[in-house]
Image (tube, rainbow, N blue to C red; front, side, top):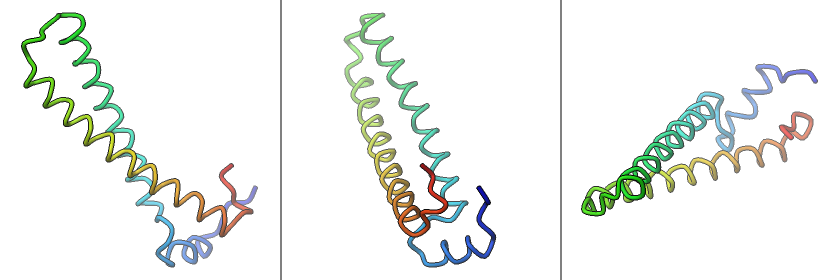
Amino acid sequence: MNMPSNRFYEKVFTNGLLLTPEEEKIIFTQIRKNTLVVDDYITRLDLIVNKEGHHKHEQFVNRIRERLEVLMEENDTFRKVYWRHVQLFELSYPEFSLF
């Protein structure tokens, strides 16, 4: 499969509907970072609550839960934005389908 030319990218990304390659990279990077932080928080919560039995740290656990909710909502938003980008890209240029 031939890769699209620079002119192709200029046409696709200047219409404002699709993400630029830089925006796509930023979203991917942020999703990965958020996922790592979420995994770390879950591991900490499991350690504190289940393995060490520190049920007295309710305030700390609630803070981590709040942060987890924000990170997961942010990741959901990033994924929706990226999914919209993929759908629009495939509708506009089926010859360069990602799937």
